[in-house]
Amino acid sequence: MRKIKLSVPSLTEARNRRKEETLKVFYSLKDEYKGIGNGKTYSVLTYGCQGNEADSEVMTGILEELGYTQSDDEYNADVVLLNTCAIRQNAENRVWGVLGRLKGMKKTNPDMIIGISGCMPQEPEATQKIMESYPHIDLIFGTHNIGNLPKLLYEAYMSKSKVIEVLSTQGNILEGAPVKRALKHKAWVNIMFGCDEFCTYCIVPYTRGKERSRDKEDIIKEVMELKEEGYKEITLLGQNVNAYGKDKYDDYSFGDLLMDLDKIGIDRIKYTTSHPRDFDEKTINAMATCKHVIPWLHLPVQSGDDDILKSMNRKYNMERYHYIIDELKRRVPGIAITTDIIVGFPNETEEQFEHTLDLVRYCEYDGAYTFVYSPREGTPAAKMPDNISAEEKDQRLYRLNDLINEYALKGNERFIGEVVEVLVDGDSKNGEDMMCGYTRHNKLCHFKADNKDIVGQEVKVKVTEAKTWFIVGELYNE
Ligand code: SAH
Ligand code: SF4
Ligand code: F3S
Image 1 (spheres, rainbow, N blue to C red):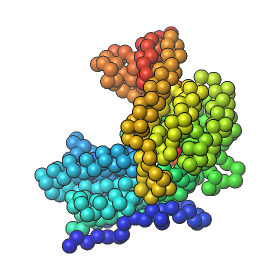
Image 2: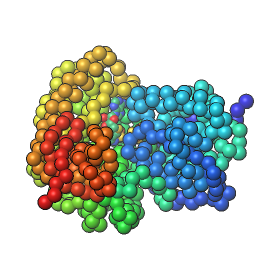
Image 3: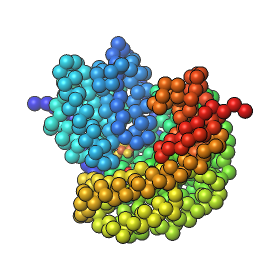
Image 4: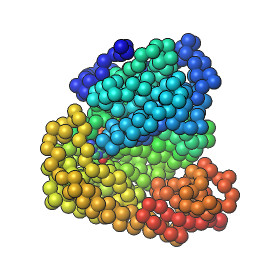
């Protein structure tokens, strides 16, 4: 009989929001764990949002500190960690598929340790299923346990049992953990963790704990260090960055943070994700005045219908959303705006869906992530009738995407003939002599380059062509 440590997580516990102060925890590595990865390899696979990617960079940092080196084969290593996402059923299905594939790998490499982390283990059903049906998984840990990775790995080596550590707590703030950043010119910077919005369809407040902000001094210090190290761009991360500071300061909010970070002088500052409810005048002002904050905003709307928004618990209406968009377009001329939209939410009528189409026409989005509603066990919406047929949901998604694409193309065409600044990421998939990167409006740009020594630099490109998903241009020399 396998020994199972600790019980499965609890969504009821995870829903609690108590008044306790958030603990700031400093990472430190105990001597007994040092070198446990010497001579061994690792692979970290990431399935979630940018916050999940940032977590993977911390896990990678810890693994390298322990002595592990990155494996050439992402599915075969001495330690394979799957950092998972629970936002929609199809995100989970991908992970179940990979778990099946890893089973075969483990047969040829029985000493391999397979771990699963991130948002899926925070769900009781998922953890239960892994415990019962996936005996080849050695390690299960949640979003609140990343700093414990050395101990968990050590236990996985020492014991013959599955090691499970998933806390359904409100969460603390981990500072000082090693980070292995994937790129040398662009960096994620967490400014806050968790979410207190409780949109009725969403699992994140349960998997990530309460909304908690990092100390502004810690964020400012991290960005100063990134600038010193030569980073050109930072993306500030949080599920609802506009609520930054609310749990901590009386008179310091997201707009103030943008102003302070702007002074550091790092080339590009962007942020995700914004919530219209907390998007305030200070932030609009910072967008309009900060030189380094790029003219791009991702402002998820989810629906263009007031009743659906209410049923989603989004706490704003179309009037307020229109106001924010109008103000931003007025104060930040040419700003690129993108969004997230869900179709087929419980009880969404054809007319309500058409309100979403009207909103897209009004905002003329530069792009959008569009999703079919996916019920998440334990959320309030999961108790509502999932009463839009699969065909109808697909139809709505199709019609919505058609309209979104029309405006995305228009949003790209406006740059034809202009010279834009592109921060170069690397080789483009569009041809051997091509490279790609992003403009200050966050537009993906492909361009021809003979000298490929420009990764991480900002170059000038004259735009010659616009497609739905990207623009094309030529290097421009004044
Ligand atoms: N905190 C961010 C993003 C969270 S997840 C925000 O509030 O915008 C990213 C997107 O996934 C959401 O904006 C939403 O459009 C979508 N999403 C979340 N839960 C979903 C669900 N149950 N079904 C379908 N889409 C969902
Ligand atoms: Fe989910 Fe809403 Fe929080 Fe975004 S703001 S993470 S959609 S609950
Ligand atoms: Fe997915 Fe968790 Fe992010 S559910 S979207 S990885 S917060």
